[in-house]
Length: 341
Ligand SMILES: NC(=O)c1ccc[n+]([C@@H]2O[C@H](COP(=O)([O-])OP(=O)(O)OC[C@H]3O[C@@H](n4cnc5c(N)ncnc54)[C@H](OP(=O)(O)O)[C@@H]3O)[C@@H](O)[C@H]2O)c1
Image 1: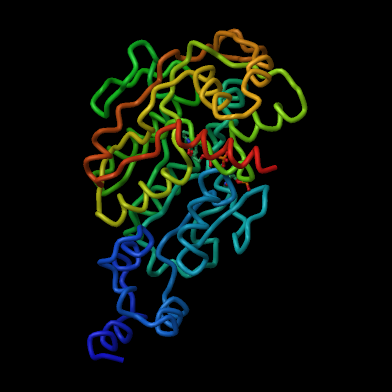
Image 2 (image 1 turned 45 degrees about the horizontal axis):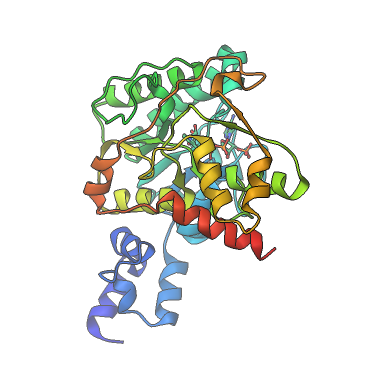
């Protein structure tokens, strides 16, 4: 082993967070390039977790946890299970109750939430126990231990009147869920500490086994069920793997502050479905299953939805030199998987 590698290995389990993050992002500057597989393995085994993922069993958390890898994280779940995750209820527990080694944790990634918009509308006070009270407590606990909180907010902090919202656009939520998210953004901003707030657009996956909108549509196409598609609500849909890549790059770059995280296209669900159907061999048949509607005509909604919640994510793209996948490419890949059975 060369001297430089030896010194890397002997210093604090051999690998600093920044170096590892370079590797996770596919950046060749990482020391991973210098290490043989065995040394690399030893380093990983000896290092302590550097990320706390609260809500690793959810849609975003599962992808993030898989990318960071089990050795690097302390992960929590609540009602669902996730490999190696610790049961955590933010309403009754503190992060100190996890019984995990948090001594090297630099980022506390807050993904736990009641994220169903109508649940929040139906029970503002019950859901505020998770989305407000528990989240504030966790933020305080993270800050107290010198860990940077990373909070996932939403495009639903906007009223949807104009769209293409930037970080300096004025939020004006019209749904309870958006109000709860905005309250936490303001709480974090008032702490005067380092933080990351990610206002995330609707995430989906080109991997139909992962779940999400394209998976739901594929299942409906298989079973011949009608597909309700709103033609008037515009979102900046983003692939879940891009969400993970962007977050890891932000942490690697020690970025802080508020960032919008959406894809490059502003599309209605109908436009997205048309795009997906256009990639399928049985394109016309797929289109016949569509039931067009307005977002606020969807049966059972407890609160009216904002119309244009598209995000301008230029700040993030420029900060981390990042180009998310266009939805056309995501749809093409998903259609390929669907066609291959
Ligand atoms: N996915 C999106 O497109 C999207 C878009 C904008 C913003 N966001 C925000 O991003 C974050 C992650 O979203 P997501 O889609 O991954 O949400 P999700 O799939 O609903 O996952 C929520 C997570 O929170 C956990 N949880 C729920 N109640 C809890 C409690 N009382 N104590 C501790 N943990 C609890 C869940 O655990 P169990 O599953 O084990 O019960 C799960 O791990 C949320 O804050 C969401 O509002 C998501």
